[in-house]
Length: 227
Image (tube, rainbow, N blue to C red; front, side, top):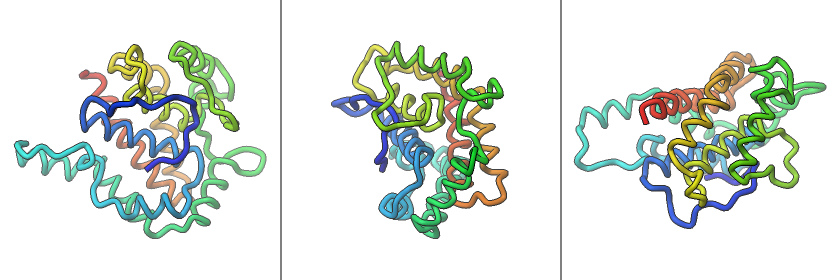
């Protein structure tokens, strides 16, 4: 469902180890795309036509406890996905582009920042960005050509998580690296950025994107703590 890649890397030749991991990678990829640029009409249509939420995309187990399946259907993540699906069907590409520009580009400065340095250090291009770059160098990743956002942008961090789940380098595409990267670079501030979008009076489509991201990051935080 994604069509943008803030970082340059080669996806794995074989799928992620499980349907759940594949769904996680896909959702990180979708968030990276939506946070990097406004969706075009095609992406909005694909989201609006999606019949199931992330829990369903992870793959249903025919032998699973019905109570577990019911809980998944009622989860905050699934409900957030359904709200995004509904909103996508009501949003034109022009409306999404105008909203993205107003929220994340603005005149002079964005109304909502999506950079880790801003939330952790109070300014852009500070030590949190240096720490991200250190990890990317260790992973052998680099910013793709034509990308102007720094590597601590939320879209770029989501793309790194996608790589750590479904990338081709088995030395880094593993659970321990996912947990360490998430705890260092996303957990301290990503939900605050989502809250900033949710609280913006003119956020509509991106309020649902932020709601989905916040619910997903909470699931990831808990799951990675237990991994």
